[in-house]
Length: 216
Image 1: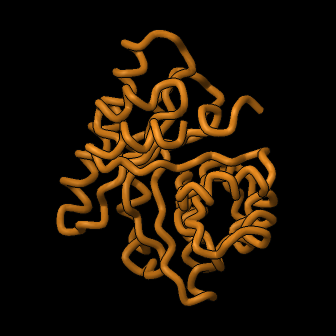
Image 2: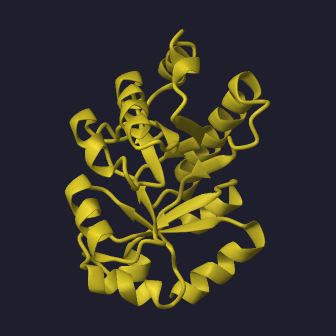
């Protein structure tokens, strides 16, 4: 399945984030040995354990909700934190990244689904975060785009609409806050059940777990 998905992504240059949560390091190595290098985890404890056990050229993405008191454990190595949903969290990531002389890429997570269980910002909250007077002083974080999860539904029209909403948010933020920053280019949306639809709507990163690893 890995090769099939990569072939589908190739024409669009969309990145594949292999979501390895709850699967052992041995399963990650199976995909690693077939060329996959970007993996995503939901929980800090599991992420740090796999980082220690696996090759150091893996690019790790934290894709789950992140508590500020857990940032210090992943700051030394994480490549991207896809779930930034508050000023407090962004400030802590910058603080911990500074201690390790690193710049950590971050995505702003937006709530675009109709489900109450999803974390994420709305546009007003994102504006407040980006207009915070202290934002320019955060030198060790780099906001590179947005992330969102569609509603878990078979209604493709609804899913497409939510993906289009996230893309419109990206475009507005790009125009208003990041017009001069080429690094602001990522739209992380799409999972095992809807990644092809997400690609069609402009996703630059898809987070695929079940199709690659099987059901948990």
